[in-house]
Length: 260
Image (cartoon, rainbow, N blue to C red; front, side, top):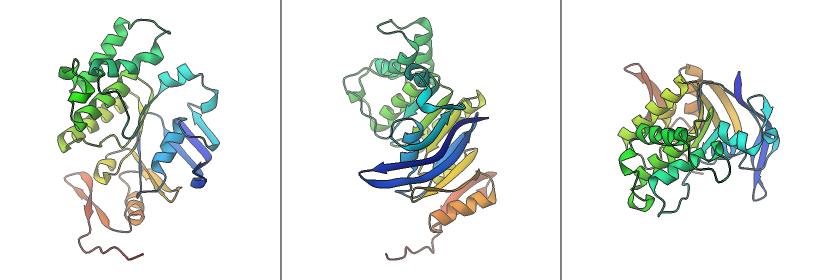
């Protein structure tokens, strides 16, 4: 079963076409990561999949056209974490994460016991519970990112889309994020992410390799042909090796960028 599907999706930004007839499937209960160089169209595709960017073509969420979903039901099913998301600095951490429960509440209804439980669980998963009474303005960039991740987790959606979720996170908390994603997938959640950290992306179930607004390859993150596609799209500036049972991306020290 596919949780999310794109068929012949085209996107224009400022009159320039940035996605060209993209067709791609995202299997349910798996973690799929979009990788590719800057300007490949990864974030544009993710935003189109979330319904945040106008596009032509068709996008299906759980075998139903994305545009046919009622807004509230779609917000309960699909959670979104974007790049450099804005939030008021004077908002308390607890209140920011509680925003993730809005799709589950009636208009003007107070939070339920289930809402409180979901928020606490999300804050504990991201190790941000101790800051619940602090404002966002008092937090570092990495701490702020963990709070925004907690807000997404509080939705308890079946599908989670994350664009550059590791921004501002130090290596230990990047590993924490990886554990959270794996826990979500074990629980049946579908995760789709955009990552620049290739070694971290290689921990996903599947990779979608993009360049210049097109999908060049999709396959298991463990397969050699997928590794070859990743190496090629980055101009062979890196090599993918297996170390202690894990695949990692290493720079090719002999690589020299060709002059344009």
